[in-house]
Length: 82
View 1: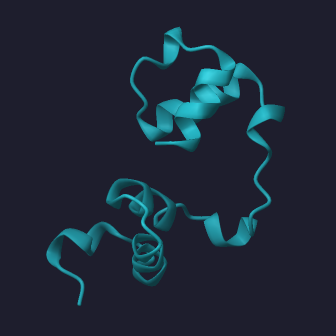
View 2: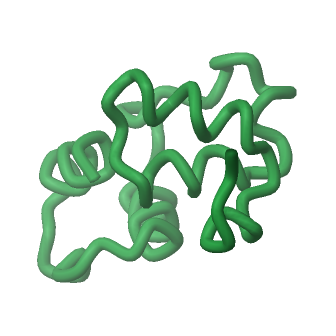
């Protein structure tokens, strides 16, 4: 049964499934609230193929601190492990 904090979650079944797989609350909520997450079907571009600026934009959306001083490989690591 969803509690009041989950009212901001747009796709509750997806959120709960991600949480059951061990994902953090923040990351599960972010994925469940992405409007086109299910339509992409895992076809997002490979992080290594993105430019550093694209990675910086993604890191800003996620809320990664210290991103301006990170190298491209550090950004990729931070995005994958946030």
